Amino acid sequence: MESSAGSPACAGFVGAGSVGNMTSIRADWVRLTEWLAEHTEPVVVIGWNELDAIVGGLPESATKHYPQWWHGDRPNTRAWRRAGYELVRVDVGRTVTLRKSTAAETGETDRTAPRPSVPQPVDNGRHTVSGGGLLQTIDPRSALILLSCSGDKARGGIHRAAAPGSSWPLDLQQARARLAGAARVDEVQLMPAWQRYTGSFYQSAGSALAEAASAGAHVTILSGGYGVVHADEAIGWYDRQLNPADWPAGVLEDALISEAARVSAQDVVAFAARTTGYARIIRRTPWRRAGIRRAVLVTVISSGGGAMVKVPRDLGIAFRAFWSGLPDAYPTGMRVEELT
Image: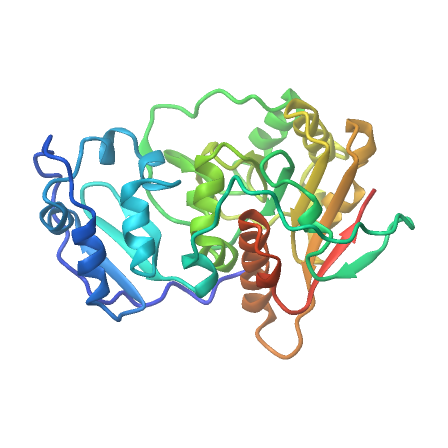
């Protein structure tokens, strides 16, 4: 399993509080920008009541419309981005965690502007190219995006009596049920999959992944405990690395084909370490059956030690560059393998 180096130590901690009385007064988010500008810590954890006091009253949307309100392009998200921070985690009623952003993350990008013109790749069959030129020809908002899960997972979530109904094919649901015990699946508390996973990829993808989820992008995650999940699908905690042998032949591939057809995707962009079970599943999926025009697998070549952390971290950077349309932000060592 691709693991994380662990979460950075929290600095600038302000004691957590309970949910205060939400006010109808319009919050002044400039005050948050100014407050953050006085901090130099890489990670700042703000208590809920303290944040309420800083901005002059959190609106009801902060809790009623969680998590959507905390992502996308809004006055509150612009406030911390202008100060050079990105959102890491929200524990409603307790704390909000922000982390210093890189230059690529803080730049204001016009999401509606056309992407820069890049040379079209030569169609010479399946091959691998370096750099992100090929990815710049694919629209991330219409493509099916595939990610790997991570070994590190957040605990907790929302209590529910039972897991919600699934839109996945019946054979995948049955395979999930058979594996649940061995995978130690615990669905007492549920949360969206993109928030459940907290490994190096998810830390590195950061606000770009949150924005993609908020925008309704077609993001699907290959999972050791669930097989395949939608990014916004409510899942429990589990402990299982993806092993293709755990799943009946063709079940995961058929689920991916079904998802590509469901969202009418013409392009598939997958991010996975090149020698893992995730990459094997992606490579052997017959994408042309779903009418896919182009399917690519983004991998990273890592030299030296620490690959278990560096590879998923750099894949997260690659995802961020792809989603944000920043061709100069792709990591060194990235490879794009054409599958169709």
